[in-house]
Length: 175
Length: 115
Image (cartoon, rainbow over all chains, first blue to last red; front, side, top):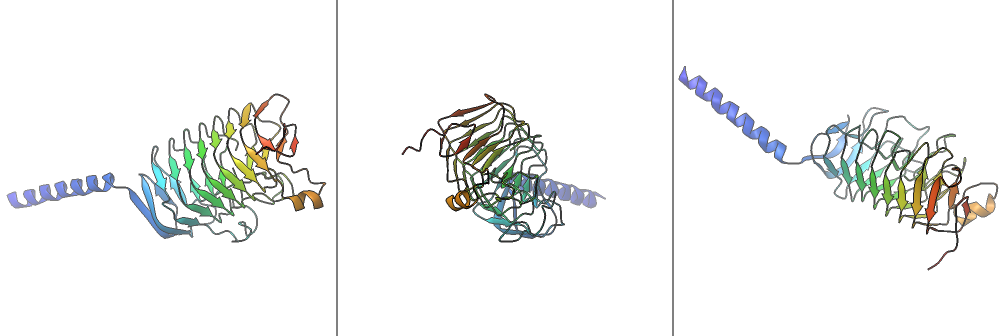
């Protein structure tokens, strides 16, 4: 009787230990993504990312406040046409990085966000977000878009190139 | 940018926007955006450089270099396009402009291009 109890206690302690270890390290992401990657802790991009998520969904989306996504010089590529960025009309919701109403989140470069059939980065519903040092190119919308639901955003030292849409009534561009 | 109380600074914006319709931009202050500061940015070769829509609140545009919007061939071959370095459609005194460098502007001061 005593042995199973002891074994259970050891297993519980081990599980707690593993959990603590995991939370103390940043998450990582790279490669081909087939469903939206939720950012719940500080996250390092450790290789180029190809987004093959469902149409109309974001590639990377924050799911916790106060955390940081570091691109580390890598490229995040969507499903847009390499020349026009669009491949047709704007696809609602299909953004590269979405702050998803999380406050005080950070997207930090260097790194490239390109070819999304909507905005490259969308700061939506967030207070105190920071977008720093990234390049956004050939997105079918704005490179970095801050809608009316966001406040106190800092957009600093970024490069925006060849973003935009020919859709009538959709005024967009770099930032 | 439609958000509020944001600071957009030290960015570069090049070659953004489609020229038809000519309402795209390098940096846009659109919708009812209020309380934003756009400063120290380099904005060249876009459809419009900095575009301020009609319904925005009070915003500050200062110390930006906004030149070559749209590129010279677009400006010369399509003079009917209203694209400029700075397009300000907001009511008078709604937007504060200070020490920007630009060549062409609508309701925005473009005093000179200085070294």
